[in-house]
Image (cartoon, rainbow, N blue to C red; front, side, top):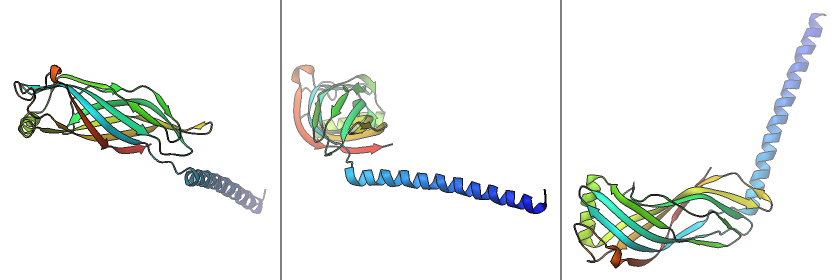
Length: 214
């Protein structure tokens, strides 16, 4: 074999490699283009959550900085999409105070939401003698004097989108619902206390910040 033949073989290999790389790039571009067109047509919008009300059965702070809390909250979710269904999977809801979780997570039942549908959950949230940071105990005392406690009801879990017979992979969903709880002067015993016999139900209608990510 002459040196010219070797040169032609090398050129053929380079051309073949370029064609393979070009084909892969073209395929990726076409896939991304199809995904972009589907997104433009469907315009997926994340669900909208609302914290409708909360019933407080117990909210007792005892020394040394132990908090016992029992709530029942009503949360609604609306699917705003015209062509996309939503599967809710592994959704957990809990209460937090100043970014510290104060109740155990409660698992919400699995739900499928069709176009423009609304789903309503009314879970109980429990926290028994939960240790809280000392500065939070002081903050609760101040809230006691003011008769107002600001908390967050949070929902964390996974969702999937459904278009026709196609179902997407799982996406992470986080909803943060602010809740201003007013206790007034009811049941103040040993710090900040709402006894179970004096349950307080509050109509909140608070919109929630919702984030959906891969």
